[in-house]
Amino acid sequence: MTALLRYQTALLLRSQRWLPPFILYAAFLAIGVQSGQPVLDSLGCTAAALLPVAAWLVRVCASGEPPAARACAAAAVGPARAHLACLSVALGAAVVLGVTATLVVTVISDPTSTDHHRRVPWAAAGGAGLLATLVCALLGTAVGALTTWPLLRSPGRAVPAMLLAALLALVLTGSPAHAALTGLITGSRTGTVPVPLLPLTGAVLLTAGALAVACALTSRRSP
Image 1 (spheres, rainbow, N blue to C red):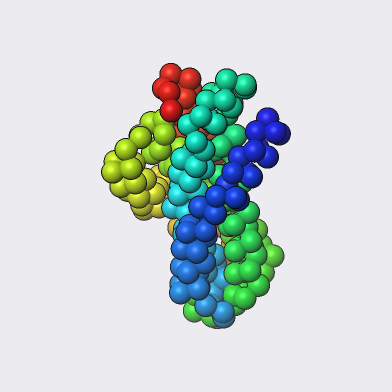
Image 2 (tube, rainbow, N blue to C red):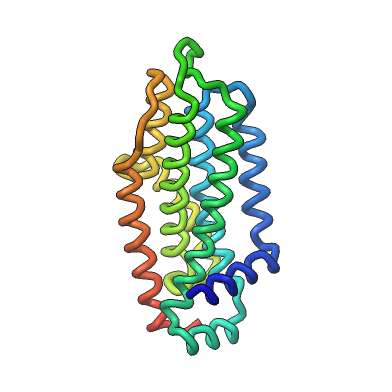
């Protein structure tokens, strides 16, 4: 599995197809997050923007390998393991990107409530932001896994489905991402730091199920 992860990571980096989602994420943060803003509000924006970016990275990884190379990897280790390595690299890239952004945003933001009247513990706020970022990275990976090959092949269907699913994951009540982000926003208003462990648990379970479905289908559908 280690060799597969290295292989998929090399494919991602050398293809430079990671640049568009990276630039989009950086542009959103440059516009939506400013120095001196309340830390929990800024961390909420940082985490929310990562979800569609994570889904995009899954699509980049899943479609970046030539069919012949995919067939060789599948023949060597099995199609499910080969696809799992692809999805894992996409998740890892999203987590690295999100964690880096979260740390930067935590440092430049003001550790106060929305009205700037109550202090917010800096370290606790950063920890809550990291957990929310992980929730969104996981759900974004799940969205990407369910809206690309082997479930959806046509870009005309896959891309709109991916965008719609990412939006629903952010706004639907009951979604782990919605719960984590709502906790940050509410906490910013009251000056309390949430600990989104329940949303994180839900995100882990949902993502594990989505990846299991996607990997299982690779054994039944040819590239």
